[in-house]
Length: 134
Image (cartoon, rainbow, N blue to C red):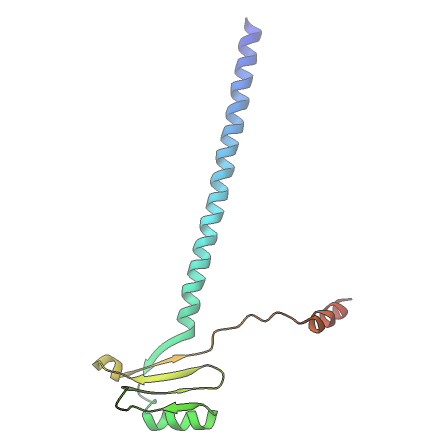
C-alpha cells in the first residue's frame, strides 16, 4: 500500500511540475509578445513625431519661405481663393506648410521630411558586400 501511495504522489508531483512549467513558460512567452508589441507601437508613434514638427511662423514669413524654396529648387505655393496656406515642397519630399484658417494655424507652420525608405541591395551590391567580407 505504501508503494502505491509513493507512486501516486510521484505522478501527481511530476504532473504538477509539468503543468507549472507549461504555465510559467507560457506566461513568459506572452510577456515577450506584449513587450514586443508595445515596443513596435511606441517606435511607430515616435517615428511619426520625428517626421513632422509644428514651428512658429516667426522666421517663416511668406517671403522667407519663398526665398528658401527658390534656393533649394522646391515648388512654392501661395494663398489664394482656393486655399489659406503657403508653403514649399522640396524635391526630396520634405517641405513646410504655413498659415491656415484658425487663429492658431495662422501663427504656426508644419514642417515635414521624407519618410525613410527601406533600401534592399541589388545583386551587384550584395556581391560586392560578400567580396568585401571575404
